[in-house]
Length: 135
Image (cartoon, rainbow, N blue to C red):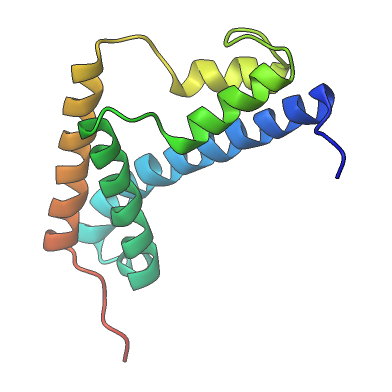
């Protein structure tokens, strides 16, 4: 098996970053959709698979923060960037702009508090507008 080239590692790191941004968008926009659609009776925001995936992702994110762990996607992306010879602030256009969109500097406790509050909001949405049962 051939070793991963630096160029391939950089491309994989960019793909992981794009996936990471997609997951963040899913959690944040999903919550906004539930908050907007729940009171309006939008049935799709109460779809069981959507809601289970949404709640599970947010719970995983909050627990990770409580245990002081980096997201596995972040760790994987950083390892690939190192393999590619890139530093945390370098890299491609995709890496540069997507990183600025979802990463920022703050004390660790602010992330724990924010993720916990967001997880509680997601759980409250589950309680207020529960997923629909299959017929």
